Length: 522
Image 1 (cartoon, rainbow, N blue to C red):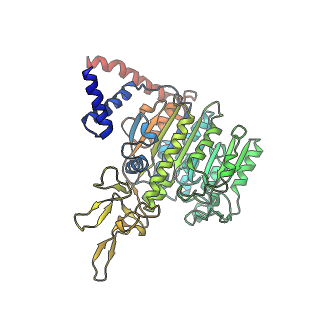
Image 2 (cartoon, rainbow, N blue to C red):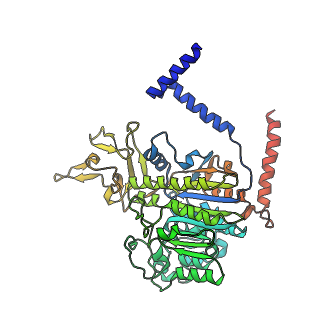
Image 3 (cartoon, rainbow, N blue to C red):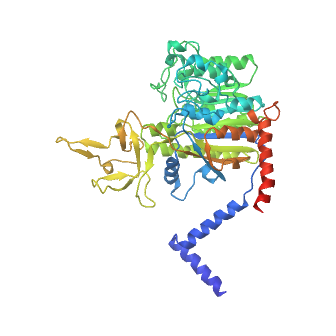
């Protein structure tokens, strides 16, 4: 009884003082040990696969977003997953990659050259003729899934023809060739990316397509009340209306389809009666979440699009494959807007959480990863509980404060120094600005046109069938092979002659190892 009273008093003291002493950390570690020891590998076939790609979502972005969302001890949706690995993101010709080449690796299982789409390293940037050689084409898991009779779809808050989604369905020598107006005369024999989405396989057979990019799909569109023309993006001028072409294709094939363009139309989608869904919600990218119009005529969140996509795809009795891109994380980082990047990451986490509420990870493999890092870093030594967007401390060199988050490269709005009349360079004092504001650009060391990508490794998180195959440091193209192996598609499809051989060889190696190794150890 006396021991119980002492224990009770200790617990009360811990609760009231919230001191994170040795007792606290041992208790936490024991809880994690119990969870880890109770976990068992899932080796069932993956009927469904959902791949989330946080564009530009570096490890530092995840850490900062976690703190921004709920403090140091909180977790984002995927940080509860039982399996994690590390991916090397370099290209075949660059140490620091772009999104098109990394997406080709993630989706097709083949690393390739900088800024090319769905082709291997035999195709150099801008080489239209080489890209027409089908021997150089890299098919994605979308094509493999369709060959296995599964429904497929993708959701993005960038243009549906942008660098990340494009390798799902296109083969192109330049990621900029989203429409014809960005293509040189030397590329006249090649189709732009938007046409490949609508006219070719596997694009024309993708069940759900949602994102932005109206001005790429349709000629001579005009700005709307909440929808400006994207001056950075391709603007179709050839008179084509690929949205109308998409409708005509589905009508000719007697398919149940729907085209939607705003929140109101998305909310009225009848998933039970729609087999093919095309949602184009913006001329360019969908607006950043902090300024997105949420009214009936506005644009949906990534979570809202993902939920609707799942409702449509889950009707497939053969299973489905879905790719979801949080593309505006990268967009915010390029402009040095850390607050925007962190909010976009949190909204990406919301989409993952909504998905987990809708699926059964017993037969659904869910993967969350990034295509590349960015140049944002977390600097010393801010106090525990401080705003991640705030001031860290004063520099011991010049006595001027600096923020916890900063960029190694940045655009003109990220200039850190001002030159005085006497020619002396002085670092700007960030404490004189609202560093938590969505429009604030964190200071950068090197000024360029924008903040550039990083070349560091990214994390991959997984739950569901064969999620344990992510366990070490992997090449980025490994992701597509895990997907194919878990779902028995592509090179690992037992129903296609010679394709299942790889799967059987790998299984035999595992079985032999499990029999021989214990004997050797003994």
